[in-house]
Structures are given as structure tokens and as C-alpha cells.
Image (cartoon, rainbow over all chains, first blue to last red):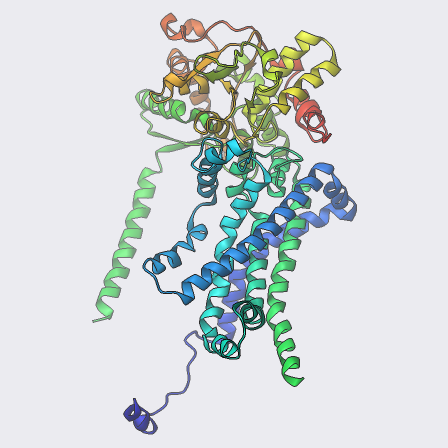
Length: 290
Length: 341
């Protein structure tokens, strides 16, 4: 190692070259790509929603059935994102801090919900939790119904939200190291105190990011949910399904109204995610100044 | 070293591309038809396409490639409106082709008068599929509203097939009660007994057959016959014919705007007329559809279709346009049936 360091001054250090050519070209291509794939469809949606007018939009949103589905979608997405954050943090902790056989496998498994077609997830979950399924058959006699109830919806949403939570917390945990925890322990802090005062504050931004991503994803999720939801109007009908129903009725404005609301909510989530790091950076700075 | 493989690769790519182009022009004499159909016709049209293409080759010497697209009927109609270039559509209900006519302006509004039998070369009807031995003793529509009976049907808002189910129930109830309020009440109680509203007919069949949920599945006769013809499900279910049902007419139409652009009018029209020939009718019967012209089919092939008292959509509901607006449009009867209590 040291001999390398000594020979360094003799090397000609090449001028640093960006691996991608030209800022202008890279930016242009990047923006063009983003426009075609993301901005164009969004603009189309926005234009159609604008054609509705605020009046038409409010009327479409205030329909009691739409309201019921929105409540369900937001509620279930929230509960699922909370659950996914807890479970995700735990899974990330286990993967990062413990060494055990099958750890690599577990690590790979986490991404499965990303790769799996959501309909497959929905059908599998329904097969497991319906009255004659592996799990459902034991719960049904106890009076616990999962498939075709909001609980089933939440389970599907936790499933698809989990990787977000794991993958945002994992790198932070890896970077964190043991030292602070060891220091806290040596100062006599209990496990709970260490967790609450030392680990959690460091993880909080990542947890919140994971939560927001899982929430935004759950809000728009369709494929895995419709199979397990039961789809009963006013009871287990999610907002994305109602969008499809409006489309089946050739009611494009009605569909767009709901879609615009979900999109706006997801967008707020993503904005919040981007704001989180700077928010915490500020807090840290002020804490240091104290 | 690095140059050679790359240029070879490029050259072979260019060669391949040129070949593909040449092949493309050579194959341009072949004519392609796209049949946009709904879900359970997959096997049926696979056979029709093969048999018609063979006949067409014999008659005209032209090689005809018929591609088929399957999916939920309403979704398929919307794809055609949004630009899927179907030469012909063969959907679950006239309302979906009406939508293509009004929303997409791709064919004239009177399309349904262009072919015999309301443009429906084959029909089906709504029957009950129950579990073997019929443990809940389900004989007719009135049994479906009994407490403790779970009925499986897809959502009429998302499924064409489910609209036939709903209208069949409505037709029976209007004959039974002859009072609008009581009819709505019957359907409300019926849908209270529905524990799951799947988005499509295949999903509902899965819920009933695979998940074991529900006591009775409202099904198209051809779907029920299909379930009974499969070895692993044959012994678990039986079909119950209600006292009154509806004549489900899945219509077919050529899509004028598209076939004029493709230059496939001749082929598209011949293809749909083929469905009315003895061979087309026989294939329909083979796949569980009731042939519109049963006299063209050997009597033995018709034995599996029992006599059913049927109403028609035109007779009982004044046509699809009216039925669609009254029952399934936003704020229609179906929405009233599903009001929160």
C-alpha cells in the first residue's frame, strides 16, 4: 500500500474526463428521455384534467362512491406504508447486522415484489388468504377474514411496499457502523435508550423516505389488490379500480378526475422525499450549534 | 482485435435487416386480419381462423394470416377506440361495438343490421353453476336471495358478461313481480349475497372453481360447459338451468375505417360470413355456443343445449343502448342497487 502511495507523484494525472460526452448533450438526451417517458403522459393527463374545470373535478371527486374509494385507498396505503416501514427497518437491520446462512438469499428476496408481475402477487396472496387457502383456512374458523376485506388490501400493499422501506434504510444502516451504539452502551444506556436516542434519529430520514415511497406506490397499486380486495363498492373498492370502472363507462373525465387526485398526492409524497434530507441537514446543523 | 468482431457484427446486422426487408416485401402479398375479441373465445377463434384461412387459400390462392386479440370485452372495445387497428371485432355485447361506433366513429351506427340474427352468429345464455349434488338446493333465481347463499358474479361495470347476468336476473324478477320497486329490491338482495365482485368473467370463474368461494356461479353456458368438459373439474360441479334466462348475443362486425385503410374489406366480410356457414356454426356448437342457425348443425351436436325460456335484450330491455343507459351508466339502476345504507 505505502509503496503505491510513494510512487504516486511520478504518475501523470490525466485531466479528469466525464465518462459521458458534453454536459449539453447529456442533459438534452436525459431531458428528452424523461419527457417522452414521464412528462408527456403526465401532461396529457393534466390537460384532460384541466378540461374538466375545477367545478367538474370537484363534482367528480365528491361522488360518494369515489369518496369511499379514496378513503379506503388513502387509509389502506397509509396503514400499509407504516407497517412496511416497521417490517422493512427490521428486515434491513437483520440483513446488515447479522451474519447467518441464507442472508444473501433474504437480501435478494426483498426485491421480489419489484420483479414479480403484480397480478401474480395478487393471485398468490388471494390463494393463501382466502377461506380455503393455506393461511385463510386456519383463520376463517376464528372469524378472521382477510381476503375480500380491507385487511387483505393492506396485506397486498405491505407486500409491494416492503422493498422500498428495506432498500432506503439498508445503506444508511450499513454506513452507520457500531461505534455510536457501543459508545452509548459503554455510557450505560439501555437497549431501548440506545435505539431511541442513537439509532432512530440517524435512521429517521431514511425511514421517512421509505415510508413516502411505499405510500405513493400503494396509492396507485392496482394489479395485486383487485384480486384480494373483493371490489365491493363502498366497502373494498380501491380508487384505481374506480378509475378503470369509469373508463369502462367511457367516462374519461370521471377517470381523469380521480387519476389527477392520486397523481397529485403521489407527487406531494415525492416532493416531500426530496425535501427530507435538507430538512434534516438543517436540524443537524442547528443541533451542532447549540 | 476489437475492430473485426464489431464490424462483422454490424455487417451481419445489416445483412439481417436487408433480408428482413426483402422477406417483408415478399410476404406483403399475404393478407393479415386482426380479430379483436373477448376472453372466452380464444379456443373457438383459434379453430375458426385455421379453418377459414384454409378455405380462403383454396378459393382465392391468397394466404391469409388471422391474428386474434383477447381480453375483457369493454377493455378490447376501448383499445379499438384508442387506435388498435382491428379489422373485425367479435365482442361480448352490442353495447361495446356501439361504443366503437359512437366514441370512435369507426363504423356506422347501424352496423348490427348488416349481418343476420342481429350480427350474432352464435348465442349463449346465463345458467347457474353449482357444486356437485347442489347442496344449497339452488333451482331458480328466487333461491339466490336466500340468506346464506353466496352468489359469484363479476362486476357489471367492468365485465360484459356480468351485464348479461344482471339483466337475466332483472328479466326474471320483472316477470315474477311486475313491480319496479320489487325488482330493484330483488336485485339489491341478490347483490348483497355477492361476497366478491371480480372484474371479469374469468376471474369470477376462478373465484368459484379454484378458490371454492360461493355456492353458485352465474355463468355463460359456454363457460359452464367448458368447466364441465375439463377432467379435473368435471366431477365437482353441475349446471342448473333457471326457469327464465336471457339470450346472450355476442355480436360481430367489421370495422369499416380500418379495413378500408388496410384494403381488407373483402377478406373481413368473408371471414364474418364464414361464421354463418355450416362449418362456422358447427365450430360454435363444438365450443359451447348455441348456433344461430341450428338447422345447419347435426342434431347430435345440439344435444348438450337444453331448452331454455329466454328473453332477448331487444324484447325485454329495448336494445343495448337503452339498457346500458338505464342500468349501467353512472347513476343508473346498478348504482342505485349499490347505494350505501
